[in-house]
Picture 1 (cartoon, rainbow, N blue to C red):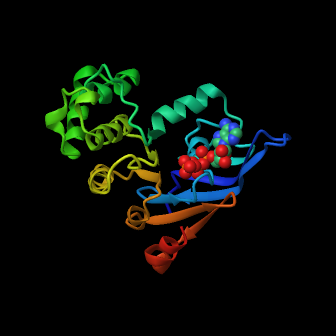
Picture 2 (tube, rainbow, N blue to C red; picture 1 turned 90 degrees about the horizontal axis):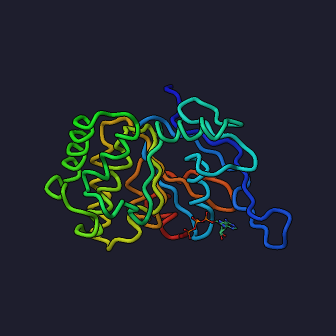
Length: 240
Ligand SMILES: Nc1ncnc2c1ncn2[C@@H]1O[C@H](COP(=O)(O)OP(=O)(O)OP(=O)(O)O)[C@@H](O)[C@H]1O
């Protein structure tokens, strides 16, 4: 079997440890995501989805446990190495697009490539290709304020994939959108991911979208459990 793109082993995380306000969020969370898998992360509000994604994406540190990205154990690695691995291998999308307002859609996708040493014309070509794949090449010159919410999130997905990462982490990427737009943006995202071998971990409260991904993981009481088959169609829909 090919090497997992993301492996989390025994992650624990407590905020404000040793104080009366201590919050024990992760209590031994494990997961393994194979190349090309798109995995949904569902959980009750406040269960720790963002915490888990931040640790998986090397934006935060667990108290204990191991994060392995593309076979590289990140335990004890310097900030410099963590940043380099994050820039090379991981793309992020959040609930709010966080696009740079003074730059066009294409420029927002171009800039991370320039920062990674890609030449301008190759970066421009990739930006246009990505925008085309999500159906908004004709909005390339628009600034974020001149785009709809769904278009802004499509650009955010393109930006996350600008440097062809191995892993996409998304935190409620369609959470701000109405149901129809959410559906369309999800389809656009799947279009971007299809055939690229990219792996994704996508936190969502939208259980219908979750059921359309390859696997569904539920985070509860600080641990992850796999929800499969019939449960994915019915059980977890009822229990959330
Ligand atoms: N920096 C922090 N300091 C203290 N507590 C925190 C901090 N960050 C998060 N928490 C707490 O940890 C818990 C998990 O937070 P997290 O944001 O990871 O949950 P979530 O599942 O993403 O929530 P939601 O679905 O509502 O966005 C919450 O109870 C939250 O209040």
